[in-house]
Image (cartoon, rainbow, N blue to C red; front, side):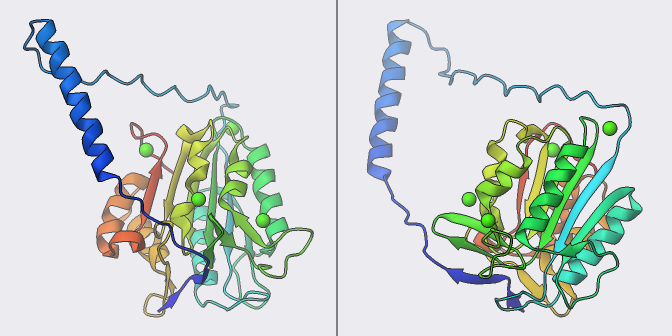
Length: 288
Ligand SMILES: [Ca+2]
Ligand SMILES: [Ca+2]
Ligand SMILES: [Ca+2]
Ligand SMILES: [Ca+2]
């Protein structure tokens, strides 16, 4: 199996501050005890209840639920090493979403074969497609961004490697950074599904800092420092295989949260190589 990863520019440094934390905890406990004794009460000490999260922004739609998707799968890169099954991932997602009524745009490479093909997955093309999808969808619509390919970390930013990485075209550098992804989806009023089968993709979560994060459900094949895998025995990316092929299709799951829980167990990886879920609304299920 091949890593869906290129270069490692650095690793995070863990700074342990156990002593400081312990001191802070002790101080807090003492303060709390003193307050309880002064009040003559034996009531249990409780943390103040945090304020509830703000409700999702009002999103009146036109009463018609439309579905749009941008699907990317790059196996043959312009200037960097190739992968094998990202085009299969794109085709499988296209078939699934198309059957569910999505208007799907597919971006890929120049030599693989695609059931539907809307162009080379240059950074500029993929960005333009996402921007158009975000602009088209109103408050009761659903938009999806699905991507399979290389991923890496550049400086402190996780990135999705588009077809033109290291040979950028149209004024772009060929990678979609975590902050670029966040910016692309910031204006969206629709529900947002994001599925990423790239190395390091768990670090693309800056998007969860957007004001519309309550509308987002994202799952990634790994953590910020983890790998995704091309799997010859599956003819797919490993997370695409377990989440889409075996979960959504094989088991017939309809909610992303349920599918994630099942597929995560089947995937059987730990630590940074384990899939991740970013659920902007834990009190509602996300249905495509
Ligand atoms: Ca609508
Ligand atoms: Ca870029
Ligand atoms: Ca990041
Ligand atoms: Ca949810």
